Length: 219
Image (cartoon, rainbow, N blue to C red; front, side, top):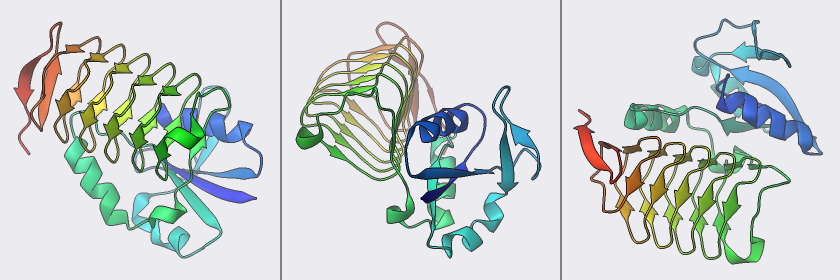
């Protein structure tokens, strides 16, 4: 039985928890969360306890029977959250993949890293490369020969075309569409419903149809 700690809470953390419940051989110990007080619970229906704060994560890392899933998403603070998670020092091999049974994965035709979440009905095409700690929410589609760098999050119903490169810690909003052969720069955010037809510079926020840069983040 793998004992799992989820970094996070409401939203992604609860989605991760619901997938863990479907997987045999996994036991959720609780959330590590820096906002909700330790001992309190998160969740409107099923209650998951907050067991600690991230400042104490080292004691769980030293217990080799405990594994982790990262449920933190930057949402305009992508680089800051990425750097914070890197500093935690959780070994790559201690992250678990949480892949819903309804996700469509061509197992022999793609590469999936560690700590990846694939929510219900998310789908990979052939020759995709999903790096460590990526999150694909419900009904997302990743086209063939596309590469997602570390800590990319793709929100519900988003479609990423073929031969796309998505940089590290980017967020792709719900119902967004990214045209084939586009490059999304590191730490960028694609807004909800955006239609991306050309490359996006790093540290950018884009929105609209066609998408345009509405802000460059001060990093």
